[in-house]
Length: 330
Image (cartoon, rainbow, N blue to C red; front, side, top):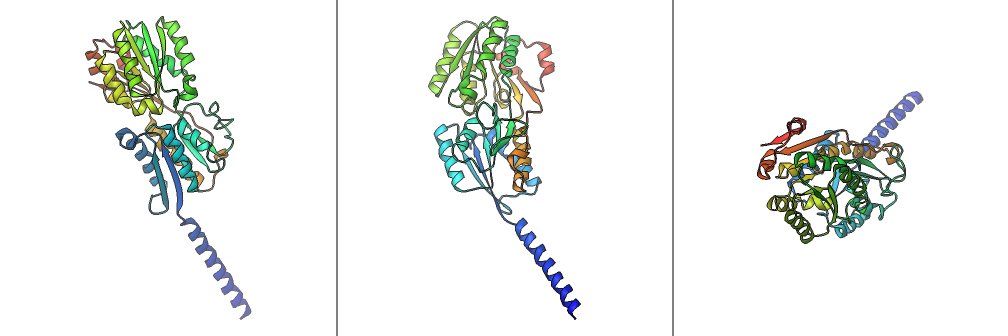
């Protein structure tokens, strides 16, 4: 009888343990998401959907075992700071941070809540970590570009529009990596090699964007390189329309720009980067720490060429560039 009682007690303990484990696994986790883009931007929604779809594939569904708190800053640095504080106050298990200024805002609010960043260009210089292979502090994530891309964008522009003699690099110093210093030195060095005049064009408003592109259109043989940051992404429609209206050939670092009417885009698939980030969110929700997750670099770059826009600008695109493009817009 004593032995039966002992076995029964053991069985009861094991059952209790399994129930407790199941209850622990069924806890609803909270994930904060701070997107630097505009919620009404179809491309921004597409990127976010890639993230949530992959998260669902990994077993996390908003409203079931996950509560997702999402904020959209629409390129506004003040809103980024406000939303960063708001999300940190909610004490989520982990926060997804999209873009460098968003990640900087979160760093200023909490040194402990795990953060997975995406679309960040230079996390070491930005102070988010001291190492890519073994992230320090509470942050890890996914890098999107290297500084050398500025030279590649200018090279592609001069190949498609060989008559350009001066080219402006457009960026917002409040949201661009290093305030613009990340790309500008490479851009200026490439301009010297390619024998074009470099124009450093910091902008903070639509009016300043219009002024820069209008001046380029007034001068003979002007061109434009739109470096990717959250501001130039949010205002890409205005930039594309102004460049087309002023007959200014322009190369962009975000893929959707050429799909929306720009001449050429060259860069990583940022929706895919967001999709990849879901695996890090998953691992942190299951107990991993940011220091265990190396910061990852982009795995592929794509070129989108808009031949319709090239014809409108009177440009004949070299066959080699057409063959190199991953996507042609006729």
